[in-house]
Image 1 (cartoon, rainbow, N blue to C red):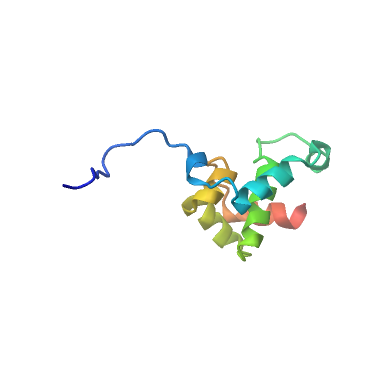
Image 2 (cartoon, rainbow, N blue to C red):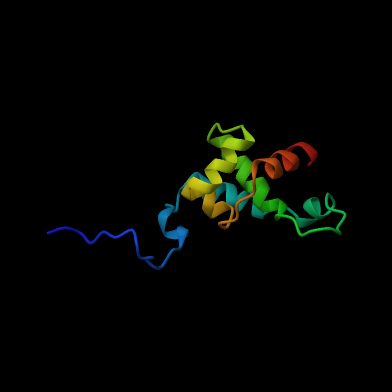
Length: 107
């Protein structure tokens, strides 16, 4: 009578790749940033201290946010938590708004 619906059990697989069409803009941003030379990003990080989020991931998230007319670091951080294309780009990592803002302003 109804399609099975339950919120109490995890359904696998949880691959976000399946939920993003092949011709989606998020894939274009991902491909473009992946083609950039890693030396560009490595030069901005002196090393030491705690491990940081990968700069390519942060770059992808910010560029995709701009294409969606999202400019506020708080709104970008919210999108990374709630929006499937953003989750996919971030690899399910959740940088907070301070991290995004610091990365955007210093690099």
